[in-house]
Amino acid sequence: MFRKLYLLYGALVLSTAAFGQYRGWSLDTVNQVKNVPKSVRDNPGSYRSVYGFYHHYTGGK
Amino acid sequence: MSTGAPPLSGPPKPQARALNCPKCGAAITLRSFGQAVTVVCSSCRCILDAKDPNLAILQQFEIKTSDVKPLIPLGTRGKLRGTDYEVTGFQRRSVMVDGITYYWHEYVLFNPYKGIRYLSEYNGHWNDISICKTLPSADGGGATYLGEAYKHFQSADANTDFVLGEFPWQVRVGEKAGVTDYVHPPRVLSSEKLEKEVTWSIGEYMYGREIWDSFKLPGDPPEAMGVYENQPSPVATNVTGMWVAFAAFAVFLLLLMGVFDMRAKKEPVLQQTYRFDRAEVKGEPSFVSDEFALTGRTSTVEVKTFAPVSNHWIYLNYALINQDTGQAWDFGREVSYYYGHDSDGSWTEGKQNDTVVIPSVPAGHYYLRIEPEADPSLPSIPYTVEIIRDVPVFGIYGIAFLALLVPVVIICFRAYTFERSRWSESDHPPVQLSSGSGDDE
Image 1 (tube, each protein chain N blue to C red):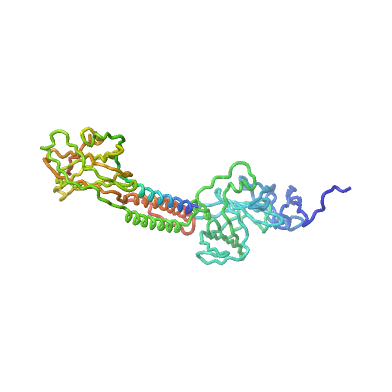
Image 2: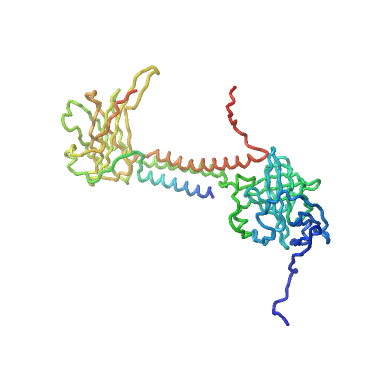
């Protein structure tokens, strides 16, 4: 029974991987924004990125 | 006058025979007729010769075990695996291993047409037992019966402690028999040696609930404790088969990866080098790239950044904006690279390039808004941005691989621990790890 279930499960995993690859899934995180005004093209400063307040790592050991 | 009932056909229906104990006079009912060799008087605990018309007394035993009560009362009828049986006998037996006495119970079942079979119970584990029809072949390590191989599990001397009802053999309390069990779950093959006579029986594991349902017993069966010698594993599956299935899936996954990698367009749509110059950035640092077209089906977009930073960082707020729909993908990426020397030697941290894959971007006309920031100590630095359409994401295959692997590992581990518990009770226990008693001297 476990083997049959596993075969079904494995087929589902492979199908999901194939579908994800076909649809262009990614593991990276990006923020989706809708209805960005066309004016941003001419006035880039009018767009406010959600990552604008990122606290930068100053690096080094 | 006729009753109208049809005349009886076939063998006459057996009737229980009522007798009296020659010792105490208590009524004794013989249920298994000619099959009974001995019968026990439940009042005075005399074992009587059932073949003797006068029920000669063969043995009388002390009632030291008055608390021994059959879980299935004698005389109970039930349908076991499609055949009606009546419980006609009960005995408690024991073995002593390493100074510990283990008890189990055996029930004699009788059907006038099918004969005798047995049920055994140990700590809530039940077995449906019948006498072997052919002689098994056995050696020290195992036995073969009807083409099936059985592994030796345990050999011990079993003692009969208590008897009640009828038995198809000359039963005696205190009788000892050499018992050897061979297992092939859910079956157990047992040989029982009494003087020069060896009896082989084959048993099949049953759950208490099946017994209770078969005999319509009230309440719940006693809970099964531990793992029994022929108890089927809850992960009763072919572990090797699971690994074979996993290997097949892994191969499919590799094929999938190859096919998608070959079919991916990996189309460069933008490559541009910019410069962050603090002196020139007086007001708004953000700007937009040239417009570019993303074609084909909804797919990934990879954004690569390269900056020759050296003990500095540069941070880029990106927004990939669809000019037609106003949909944007907003993300920030840092490129930083540090190195140096300390008491541990040389070290590095970070790298001069960065890659991000934006998921599920539909076709359309796009531009990239870039808002750079940099280490305040960095007056000026160039950086290159490259955009590639439709790249494969290998991390998905990694996750799929783990998703395929984890259930197999869990099932194998459960099967392993179950078998380990089973065999720890045998004559062939698995190698025990040192308990580490900590007797440091």
